[in-house]
Every structure is written in C-alpha cells, then in structure tokens.
Length: 128
Image (cartoon, rainbow, N blue to C red; front, side, top):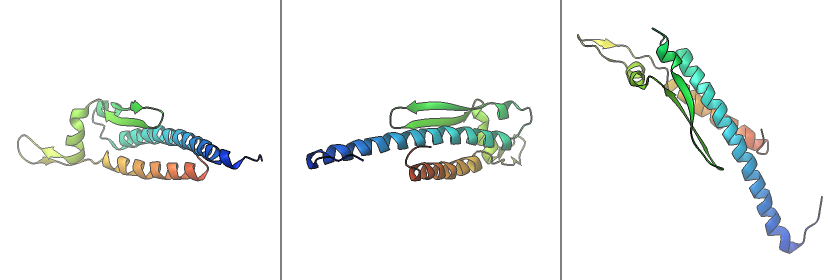
C-alpha cells in the first residue's frame, strides 16, 4: 500500500474509476457475445425444421463496437419467414397456420441471462 498526498487524491480516484470502467466494459462485451451465441442456439433448437434451411440460416453478427459498447444482432438469413412462423399467418384458401414461437422465448431468456452475467461480473470487480 502506498501513500499519496492530498493534492493527488482526485487523480488516484479518477485512475481507479477508469480502471473499473475498462474492466466492467470488457466483462459486459464478453457477456454480450456469449449470450448472443446462446440465443442463436436456443432459436435454432426451437425453430421449425421442415427442410432445415430456415433453422440453419440463423447467424450472430457484430453490428457495432467501440471502446464502450458492443451490439450483436441475432438474425435469420431467411428473414422473410421469421414473422410468419413466429406469429402464424392466414392460408391462401382460408384458415390459419399456427404460430411457432421460437424467437421471443429465446430473447426473453437471453435478456435475463445477460443481466445476471453483467451483475455477477460487476460484483466480482469488473473482471470475468
């Protein structure tokens, strides 16, 4: 443990806060990547697999990243089907095709897991 002069106190506090910010940002980015991959797997496992092409088309893409944030997007390559399968749709000759909810449950679980991961990382001191 070192001693500091009173006039150096604010500099030391700022250094400590910067270090904590960097550690917590790294932990947050790791959590976002991990949870995005898990959400993709959850969607794929619950997605309908008539031919398998829709199920296999799900991807995780890094949409935006800078030194303070990371945005990951989980999306289907066959995006035209997502709304129809998730919410159901009308048939041509009448009637409806039943909904197969597979995106919303994975998203809700992912949000909970991300919150828990980030809280846990911050409680550990920012590192994972």
